Length: 117
Image (tube, rainbow, N blue to C red; front, side):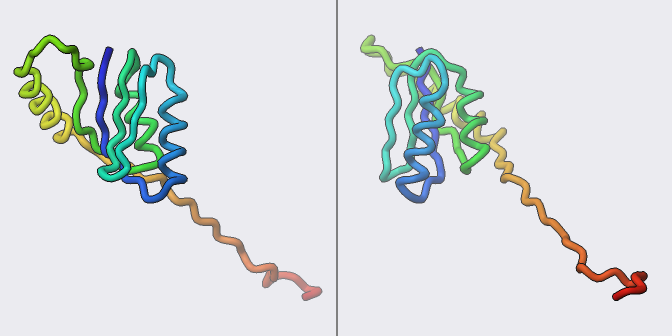
């Protein structure tokens, strides 16, 4: 079981529902929750975190907060330090690739070499 916490730049309820729908489409997702106040999306289950983050980055600016094993009630407190180290390492490789915009240039309807015009 893995647990992924990402901060996604969502502006309205439509984006939130679309992000939840996109992430829930992956196989192996156990639970999915969204904190609307902080725009943090928490995903847990048997899934590939890289695929989930890449899919979210196609549409929104996504920042990885933590990646790790799902919390068990064993009383281990030293794993928080490992999560901080992983989060700092992931921030070093953070990239945002916005969707490219395509511009079309339509030539005017008149042709200068036309004898009839």
